Length: 158
Image (cartoon, rainbow, N blue to C red; front, top):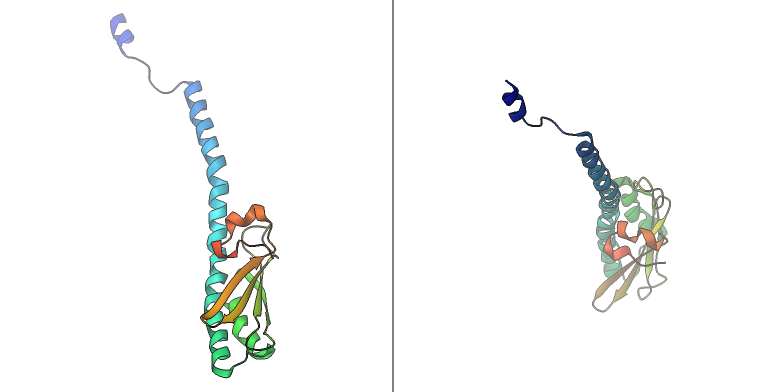
């Protein structure tokens, strides 16, 4: 009988083994959670950039067809669709170029991005006509340490 008890071996985990597993999970969570938050904010911020693509086409089409940028009222109608279609855009401002050779700007004020460091900040799109089409530049007043949360095309300071 004594021999059978010796052969049974250890069952379960020791306290130190459990503590090591908990520590490893804690370290992985400390790395993964901030990375996941950056990823979700970047995904949310891609929406206004995509909506701006549609608006810029409409603005450029009006520029090409009429020879001038839409006036403030017409331009506002076009770009205001961005704020109505996006949960992360609080407001939109449009400033048309003085003539067909000057740039127009569209400023998107952000909200509900999932990052308090980015909420209330602005993405400014500058639309510049050229002989080869329309050049679009995106600038922002978001601090550079949060650029990893922005779409690549908007990682320029304003």
